[in-house]
Length: 93
Image (cartoon, rainbow, N blue to C red; front, side, top):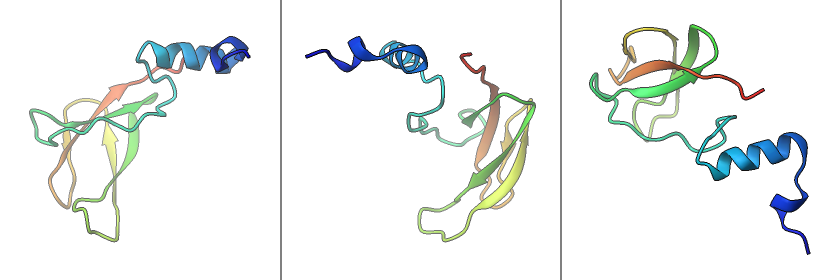
């Protein structure tokens, strides 16, 4: 029987090859956890110069604090103060 890697074609094959190299072309992996400080902000990939971000602030919160994150310096969540930084992300195709 052929393996998934042997049978895959087209975009599925490209994604599998990228994932085998440790790349995440479509942000399918769970995001890496950061300290959320100014020195170690949460990194948010984006293909544009701004992106809307949701912060849960505390583990047991039942609501999300939404805010715009812009390219440049790290920005703070208006509620809890966790830092986020926008980083460029290029689509693989």
